[in-house]
Image (tube, rainbow, N blue to C red):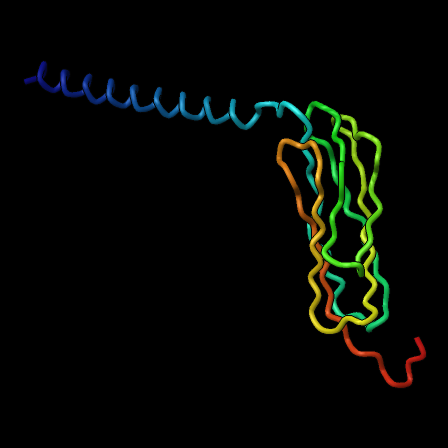
Amino acid sequence: MLVKTFKVMIKKLLTLAAVGLWVASFNLVQAQETTKQVDGAKIAFEVTTKNFGDIVQGDVVEHTFAFENQGNQPLILSNVLVTCGCTATKWPREPIAAGKSGEITVRFDSKGKSGAQNKIITVVSNAVNGREKVSIKSNVLPKKKDDAR
């Protein structure tokens, strides 16, 4: 009887050890994947949306989107696309070294606009994560009649 109980305990311990080894190896593989260095440039924005809230028709608002090259190769922005002529951008034409930061400034002119606005800005680059998008939002209120803007 004692031998039988001992054999059952050994089987349970071996099963528990096998499960423990499997879990440990799974966690090791997962940790290696998350720390794997990106081969190429990788653009990462601090913030991807700026909401200006309510603005008055004719107001011009501006926001600067900061980004970092989290890859191991220089990041080259080849274009920054906007959806309408009411939005203008200023962006770096020179390469951003690995680990360094840059900025894209977006300016929105609300002249002739009204209501909810959501302007998408598409950043085209050599980054491994492809095209990235940032956006600016606002709610354009009509001018007051006595407002001489």
